[in-house]
Image (cartoon, rainbow, N blue to C red):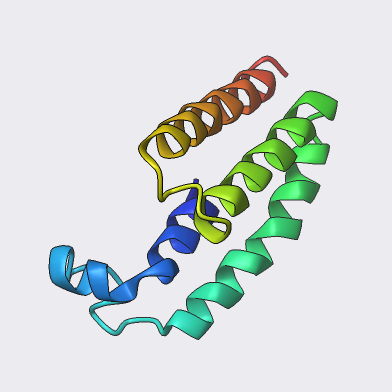
Length: 104
């Protein structure tokens, strides 16, 4: 979830500056560049941690990451239908991963 939140916020920092100025980017506590570094650094970390919990958790992480990239980098957030479908699929994927970890 953290990766997606960072990815989403670096897409349009000006929107957050207007609507949520207390967040780290608009408040100047972190730069867009450093936030992007953190976001991409979290990808291999979450993949390794997920793999420790099994194939289902790993598949969930890969699926969630793919959905996040589609949403934030390939215009999935632009249309109402794609935005809602990708959001629902993302939550579903995260829930499957959480359940697989909790079942361990």
